[in-house]
Image 1 (tube, one colour):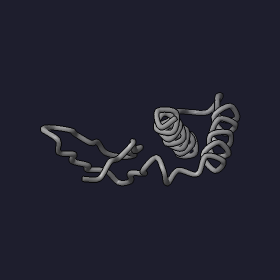
Image 2 (tube, rainbow, N blue to C red):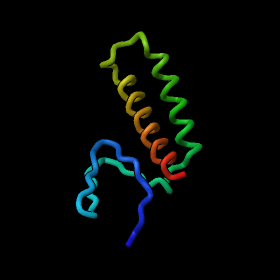
Image 3 (cartoon, rainbow, N blue to C red):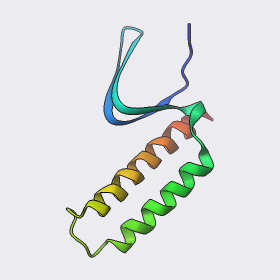
Amino acid sequence: MVRISGFAVHGGYFEILDNRITVLAQHAELAEEIDVERMEKARGRAEKRLQEFSNMSQEDKDVLRAQAALKRSLARQVVISRKK
């Protein structure tokens, strides 16, 4: 049996039923594979971009990319914090 301590899912979902995990996602990362330093830098860049774009339309592609990057970083952070 494989023990998985946690994973972050981006662009999809996962479901746990009757000891079976189904993952349908564009990207999923095991907690053990997440580079904490890289995650923190990405979160900082995304937050900075969102502040710079605060007066721009939400439809702007750069704003949407920054929001997606921030969501990915936060999902990674949740997985890492549960691992401890």
